[in-house]
Amino acid sequence: MALARLLPRPNARARSSSEPSVARVIAFANQKGGVAKTTSTLNLGVALAEQGKKVLAVDLDPQGNLTMSQGWNPDEIERSMFDVLVHKLPVSEIVRQSEIDVAVSSIDLAGAELALSSMIGRERALEKALLPVKEAYDYILIDTPPSLGLLTINALVASDGVIVPVQCEYLSLRGLVQLENTLSMIRENLNPNVEIQGILATMYDKRLLHSREAVEILKENFGDLVLNTKIRKTVRYAEAPVKGQSVLKYDPSGEAAGMYRDLAKEVLDGASARQHA
Image (cartoon, helix red, strand yellow):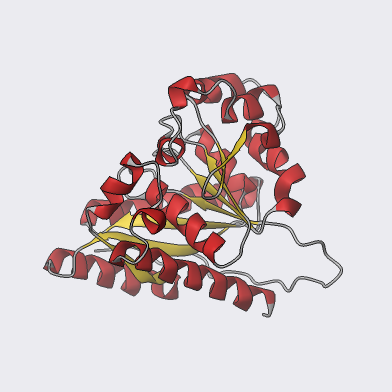
């Protein structure tokens, strides 16, 4: 596959000891649906919480799957991320506590792009909304919709890094180029510091040659941006949301939970490397 090396290597900057500790904001983004963005956002958040980190997960998808995965019905939520983005409601007023803190979504969020389109500074609505709570958390993880529309752009503008879940198949790999084109425009015009933090292989089945080849293609084209952790297929990821739980709570000693604990270690190791670079 002719995928160019488009993704930049991270630019590290040491944090001064005089700087306040603020959350690292990570968006999970891929314009293709069904690649485990929501699953990864929630379970990485819970795995980081197990490591003693204070985590906020932001449900920026109008489908509200992250919200549902913690047991809440988006159709019954009166105030959500829609009110934060459009009506400037403080994000702290729509955060709900469960395994981690969740800034919840509702069906109203489907109208956010239209409502934001006429606003000045519409691409920075989420960035501004998160500023008052960044010192309260170690990590803010953003689950984005399966598109490169205004909600996803808001997430990328607000973020320090992006984790790209990629299903181990050919068509999913091609979508990386389109995402990087969007990121390039955002770096040029809105957020010069946003970077690809990692490419996460999902739906991996080591028994299938196609899955193994897809990972090799990723590594050939994107090198060390490809995370070592691979999220393998297991029915546990489908069962856990039905119970309103992460897979780490639903099956804490299972293989599925272990994968996201491994991912959390990679994310934490990467953060340490950046701070000391």
